[in-house]
Image (cartoon, rainbow, N blue to C red):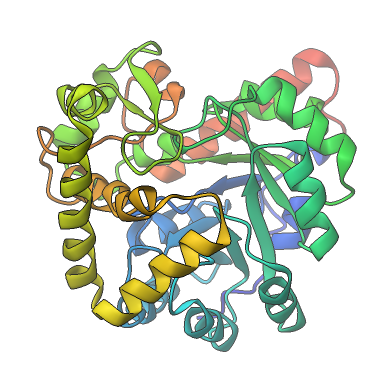
Length: 367
């Protein structure tokens, strides 16, 4: 099936909801499901795109062959556009990029700064590029590289996150760049979508809200743990991989934060070797990637070793269902989510709520 067909003309949405991101991505509604590691697989991605939003596959935790199969499965599930999230410092990122180009994937998203050369290669091949940023200066930098859009994630967001609240970050970024900006961090309903539009955004990107849907493959008892969380049950910590990451506070997180650093470091090395085995990465490639991470940023060798903690501890919960030995990356929005709709129900509800809000404000415009 083709993944490049345009939006269906019969949805009857208010003109206000047909934003530049809809045109850029060929989607019906300005909603994006983010590429969450171990969570955003083919089933969730396909369901999101089929619902008129944009689903994004998470490739950072996949081997090349797994990504080939996942892209094929998404195409079997939907003829709508979808994206793939890439890790720019992955040892095989060039091979992954070639695959996206060959398969005519609509979008490449990035959780880290992708680099100007990588952006140019994708754009020249017709692939839309969209990194996630957490500060105005970062948005200005990647816009200068020629990215097509950005996701501005506020501190309410889940997983790796910044320190600026969404309500302050989003207007700053919108004012700083002349490309479409999506808001992320705290969004879960139609009122939030309208709020993002009022700040000048072209739509919203959501992770936790899509994680908590029927099509998400996260084990049901893990989803229930998310539903039980309050807005005060999360913490931003650096102990998992050396970078600020928002997770649900658990006994394990407390142990990592207050336990001996030597124990944490040993755990990180063990996880690095486990991740190598799962992804089929050679020891040479692992060492090469670690060296690149060390030279390319401000990460110490201890933090480089710890970088394997996040994917492996996330896998323990999201794939294996082991709440006692894993972590639960989450946005604070988990504290206001109480049920597990299908993706189609969720998208339709958000659109209906946004439409009702626009009508109430007298801003719906023509259909």
